[in-house]
Length: 420
Image (cartoon, rainbow, N blue to C red; front, top):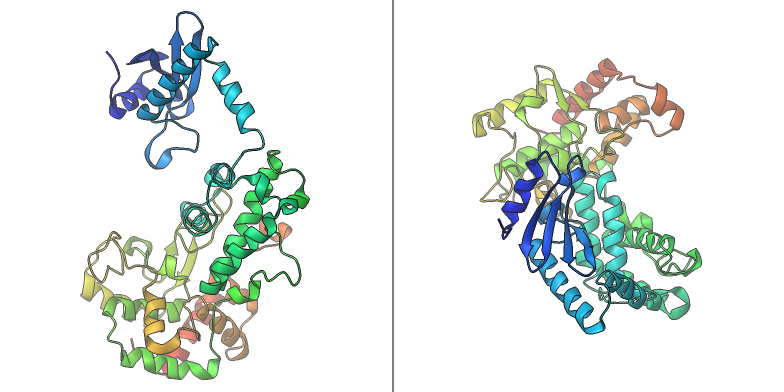
């Protein structure tokens, strides 16, 4: 049977034996048993020269940079056969020819694709998506993807090209510019490691004093002083911008728990017991490292104030999967994580406070106003030990101290005007 569809190829993955199926015009798909992803790859076959390996099969979200769909494999094989006939050469020589032609002609697209492929399995899905979007959409939206790495070398004027792009991004968002520059440094280091750009001194994205690069401090999240908190709470309660109740309640829970918005908006009812939230470490927003610390849950003691808010959410939404539901028709099953920041912005806090900046308020006031040990607050923030030795040995939870802090913190917010 000739293979003509994507689904027919996927069906071969379940075959316990090594299997070869024709795809027409001398193209074959091979399923190698006991291999990752079913060991699916394409070969072109001729009587005179035998098999020519074309590449692995891939499609959809799991498709890697050099994988081939069925349509791509057919197109490539026809091109190779045509070239082989005209040149009277082994089809396998086509790849040597392509490699020779590509020498010193690798592009920024090659570097971005290679860097992302290298990082894909070591990053959390949300982090990988952020890397991909910033490089593909933001950076390549300014620097053409066909720009050769040779022309981006420092000695060839690449420094100016990259700096102009960073400055353009910086004019819109210093935080995004800072992150894009960090990713470009890593991308060019990857290219240098592959031998595509010469030595490390050719990296055009590195930061130097006075070079106009975004200041990392510019990326810090705006925060307010403790003396400004009563006014903030009053603004939230008055809700003059008439924001949806889902966003208001999410912002209130953020004040009480100082969870990052990504984790806050994804909270699920099944993570909540009588007196504790146990948020899986793999939840976006907790910033756990994939395969290293994402097995460690973040524990949030439930205070009387949090319990009241949860009761209100249950009355409002019922116990569906997520605590916070979308405000309108959405591709997401939970509240968009931008909602708390949008609410703060609409209240007039655009350049004064972001959701993440509230964590700074809680940390500072927790020490200066409530007098708690900084390490207790660190655990309430969901931070894990950074030092190598502590990472290995410190498994302490300090849960009772954290519960005491959360109770006092929530009571203090209520005294400042928060209503639950």
